[in-house]
Length: 588
Image 1 (tube, rainbow, N blue to C red):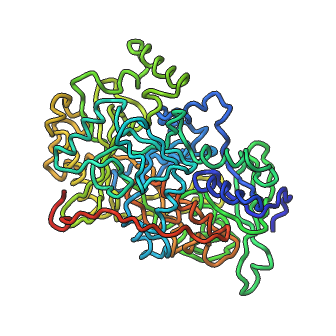
Image 2: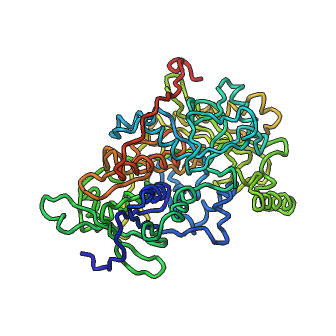
Image 3: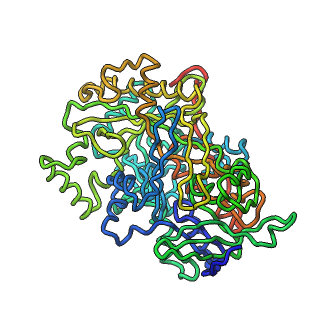
């Protein structure tokens, strides 16, 4: 029984001010009736000297490596990756991972959401989800005064809070155009909107950057800060540097056959060390992501009872073996070539005396005008393709960048370019488990990468198809020696590719599905076996979408917010998505 003082009582307690938490804080206070307390372990970056590392799109690697804004997790040793431990950064700041991610806005393929319905997520078909993608999105054109600027695209949203843009033309580096052209030369389609009717093809990647300011548009910027300006502190109280230790249940509801009812959370002030409680008159909404949400459920007695007992969790509320299981993530490897022309990002990506003036110049342009290369997330073009005939929709994603990154953070001090090669629907499944009952101890994160032969085979295909692009005529004037894998590595040999992937791959930072709909929560995020408790974030996805996960996470929170507010869902969309007629017989 907790003896901590109750510091606050609100209608709703939201745990985690990341992408989903920021959306809920905005939408639940919009009507002026609900009161919300939003709890976040991190701080706000606003007003700090290093806030520019979050706000400047091109500075995205700074926060990934900075523990001040990052939980800085690592996986357990991965058997399929030569027992390497992969980095798993997660945002520890208002806006969560939307404040430190690469800002690539990808909704996924329509079939992903139709698949969700078959996996236990009733009411989550593409027709159900598209209206919420559009409600969230505020698309702004980089070239608004030019013809053919995609200003009447029925798949886009133009009035939403989440500012999104893309470089349809006038890109920041010629190599972006070269990559897109290589796809066309290889026989793939070129599309203006990879989030619209047709995902399959090459084209501009949307990014969560405000084209008017040149700054990152995190969920905090899009949803939370506007809400804080519009409502009083009595209606929306944000407590930062606050770690939620466990969920509190009404004691009487834990007796006999009663349904346990969540009534609040136990917190720790990370600055003073004080332990206190915050209570909810209506619901507790957990929005800590695919790591934090299952961790908090398990710390609170919801999970596999046998495993909880082993780590000293005494209060076991609901036995559910699925909590923390079904862990999924995307794996990537970087195909890198040196560039024979001095046109890559190298001069401005490296601190050196030789290029110091150029680096300062592009930084000043952004600070003074919000324009230039620093207003780009450096992922201006990319592609979605199918790995083989018989695959109905894209299962490979390529991100292109006009530079070579060593590891994941530092640029190679030479001109080059790279293709991030990743498969989209791996069959490997992992698990997240507790190390102990200490809420400050990171859990065991085991994505179980490349544990199936299908995943290994798909990665080989993805690598070979990527290298085919570099061999297209348009790259001839730019392609130098291959840097990674080494020039001597034969990509025609399965064993060579397999070893390169095992030794060089990285997570795409898309952990998800650990509190899946149909297994841990229902289609509205309500946790099975208890009342007054929901999970709303990427952890409740039944399976990963085909692409980056921030856009679907925000959509998901938008949709569930209507249910919490007692509103009818938005009307279904009648728009369709593209499926190639020849998918059974042709790879492209």
